[in-house]
Length: 132
Image (cartoon, rainbow, N blue to C red; front, top):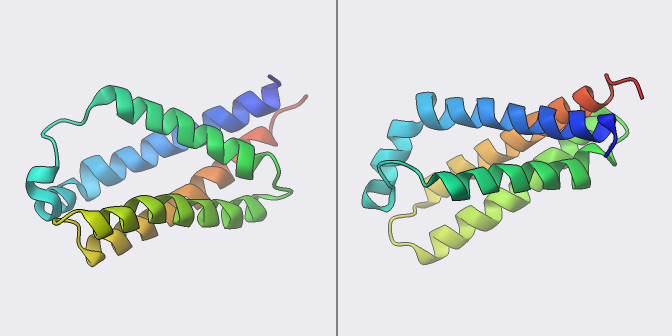
């Protein structure tokens, strides 16, 4: 694995952890808790959360960050990947879970689209700041 790939992965992953941590822990945690009620655990399960971030960052790097020729393209493709990934999750939940509303689905999809765009841009910029 080259330094460029390592920096792309670490930049993408750290951006996700910081931004999603702020979103879920500081800004929107209570909103999710009030909307989801008993569907939400008091404390998230650590292993699946860690696996999600590791896998999602890997997907971002492989499918968006490395093939992009600019940070703007990384942002655009990242937004598309975020919309598809979060849309798959949210629309499936809206279709199958009684407590999952259209508003929650749209809010979470918008966040996932924005978050993935930003994190892919950060990953791209980190990768291209490294000397080979």
